[in-house]
Length: 189
Image (tube, rainbow, N blue to C red; front, side, top):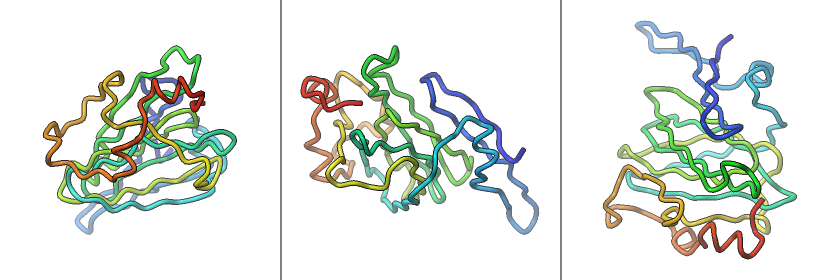
């Protein structure tokens, strides 16, 4: 099998490690193979590919889409390195409000499967990063687009870059509500 699969501490999250064939020319690997991904527990029809270029210190997220347009994401970093974060926002889940962070990089070639029911975001650790994510479930829908604050004090995500003055965050992401505010308004999954 060209991939190994490591279930993470939050139900449904899977770290995917592709087999890399390296020699003096460089390397080759399969980045996605539907039949193997299904065997590894990654299901759903992929409907969209997204590519994000960002500079060091950029924080994107924590984003998700509301019902009925929920999305799963298979995320990898093609260039540079990121701290990729998934937060369980499934109301009633035993791990609701818990998060997992993994480093994805061009060096480790790992992918992170984030199923529906999680908010997703990342912080760029290298000078620049090129992040590819396959989306399952639904295509992007502006009217279902939602998110929670990357620095929500109740979540207390341990982001690697601590100096907020060095971060690049969109105005939209700076003003996202907290998880508690989303919960109180019934805007979670």
